[in-house]
Length: 122
Image (cartoon, rainbow, N blue to C red):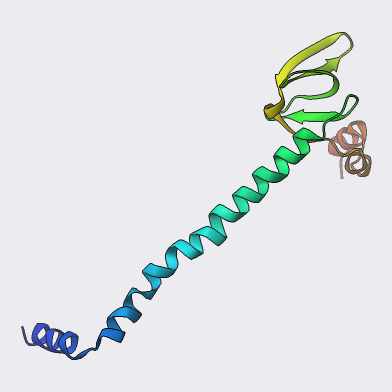
């Protein structure tokens, strides 16, 4: 009981500036949320929309479902994607996740080389 009365007296003695200082983290929370959550997400969405608006026939793309192919045409907000010889899919332009960068693929070892190194005894 003695501890509770000390805490009550300490709260009464604090000025209005002390209570404002205690509220500062709650007041800064929306600012922190904006810079850590909202702003990066808006930037990512803006970049995605910019990339989707610059798509051209012949670009190699990957869809959000992981399908790779080449753009063969546009039909409004839809994109025709050739995934194999004489196999075309019609997907929404918003489903295009990104363009495939062919320079990154040349750095990776060939699939046959990876299989061969995995099977060889040490």
